[in-house]
Image 1 (cartoon, rainbow, N blue to C red):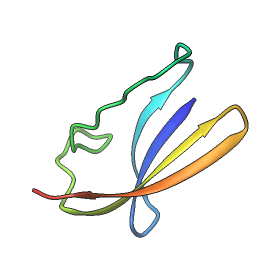
Image 2: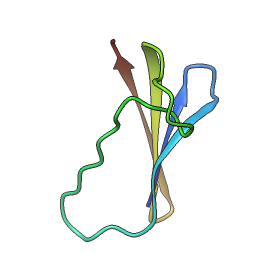
Image 3: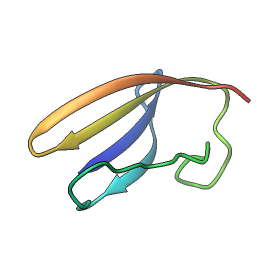
Length: 64
């Protein structure tokens, strides 16, 4: 399972998870920081989940 976060321009902000997860319900929490550890600005982000050959994308807002 790979969970990535992109800004609205399509630039990769952070890889939130890359690897196996146990079956059932799972939760991944984003601390609002990019891969360099810097706070991400307020705005719209795209969360992309890839698992078992399937891909899903959702919009989310970060408000500081």
